[in-house]
Amino acid sequence: MTVTALPARTTHEGAPAHHGGALAVRPDQTMWTPEQAAVLRQSGIKDNVAAAELSSFLHLCQRTGLDPFSRQIYLIGRWSKKDGRDVYTPQTGIDGYRVIAQRVTAQTGGTYGYEDTVWCDQSGRWRDVWLAPEPPAAAKVTVIRNGQRFSAVAAFREYVQTFPDGNPKGLWAKMPAGQIAKCAEALALRKAFPHDLAGVYTAEEMAQADNVEQEQAAPEQPRRAQRAEPGPWEQPTPPATVPPQPERRDYLAEAQAADSADAVRALWQEAKAAGAPTDYLDQLAAIGRQVAARAEAIAAAESGDPEPADAEDVTDAAGEASWQGEPARQAAAAQAAHDRAESALRVAASRANLPDLDDAFHRAFGKTIAQADPVTLDAFRSQIEQAAAGGAQ
Image (tube, rainbow, N blue to C red):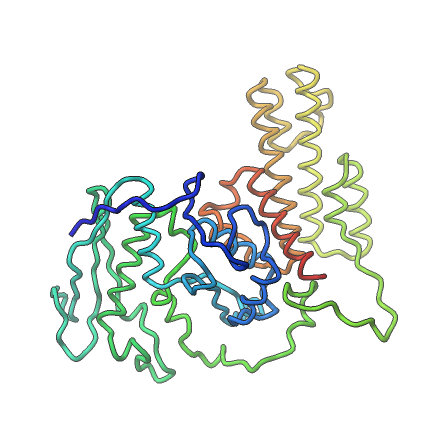
């Protein structure tokens, strides 16, 4: 069955039209408004959510056109033993996937539809209807977009949500065929619409993440004291009853603002003398190389000299490329700009207590940090810094 989508009402930029109101997500906003933040908090997002997770979620809502306040998309927190806190992941229902597929098809003027869903028993035999009392072993869904077939198979054992004793629970016990079919449909739709559905998963796909494990059954603990920065939902703390301790010096931020490699080298020496760990010193050294490469590329470009004025100890890619003429110098300057933007983004994420920056960035933009341009990296860094600043007020 193939469906030709009807045109959808859109904005001048081709984005889905949004209804008005205080909670409407605007395409141009860079952080959640106080009204929106209050509703999100009431929906179950705790104050230990990272600022970058909120920024990533906002961008995902804008990109997909799904409304978090009508429960088309939402953030689910799950305890992470590795991170020592709830890590939040965007989720939607299968209806949200269908909304996006219909909207994209309407905007592009194409078609999309489905072949009949089939289920597989334990022997490997496929059936077009599931009547057995036991759950199927798998389900297969094929989406047809613009005449091209996108098939996906979902195995029941990989997605079923269970009790500690291994028995299915909830809808997985009552309607197992329907639940695994939704997972297969989500996989097929994500193949057919990879850019539009990147970074968001359906609740049926993520159900197994809620399976109870003894190591995850940890009681509520006072984890706020472990964070370097206050959460976005927290109110300003009352005046301290004891004299505040001096703030730790942020050598990374100072290195980012340095105008020469010598200045970064001096910071490296001071950080080492202060007892900074090796990985921290390595980050400072990397920033120093970026600053040196950037200065080298700029000087070479301004002088027009195919060889750098001082090339006796050039080990970075930008310095080596400056021997190869103008195209290589431009490439080196572009790489230096990317490295600087990436380093600044990682510093901002560290301050905002976001250990899984790469995953959050991929969910927001559908690409890795290495694939993004400096403008995109700076824009996401700005969102993280604004969200963190708003939470600290």
